[in-house]
Image (cartoon, rainbow, N blue to C red; front, side):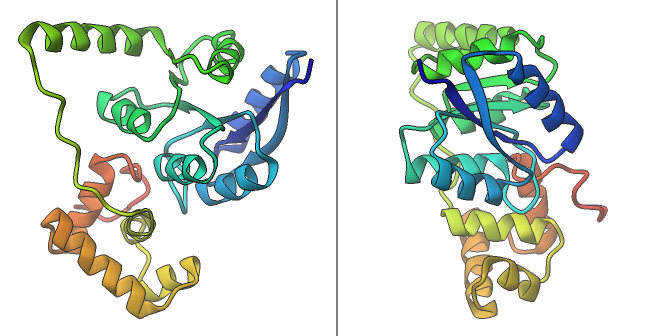
Length: 225
């Protein structure tokens, strides 16, 4: 039987090394590559077509949510399992909307990760126990009340999300243009589109939005907001 091929996307080297060592003990799981930022994860997923991508959310250059969107847009057969320090419902709901198959918090017991990889590989949803419990409770309450599905957040494009992350990380328009290999004029156009869609009219507001929606962590942006 062929092993389950896995791409690890995690910006902290010590965490990646620990995950790789853990998965090396599993005969049916093979780590084929590691990515230290979201953009590298997207490129490696396109090149290697792993069975499962274990994805952190907070990563530089391109966050895990946007990386998930781009990976699954290019190849919907890849399964994404999020492994994050964040357990907020907003983060969980967003990545599940994007097509991820599971969400584990990093505090989860070590034995849970290999089994979660096996489950999502088979197309089964998998969550940390506390997240699973909250999702079931919300579903039951919503059904009892006859709630309508929640309204989705403002829809911004993949490129706009990339520009937003770089702006929130403190990059100037020229730096963002160089990073994305587009013109400064195009960056300015995306910035204005973001402000119009989100009804936000300054960089500080865009940064607060990026933090609130998990595009970056608050520690990434050193400016007092």
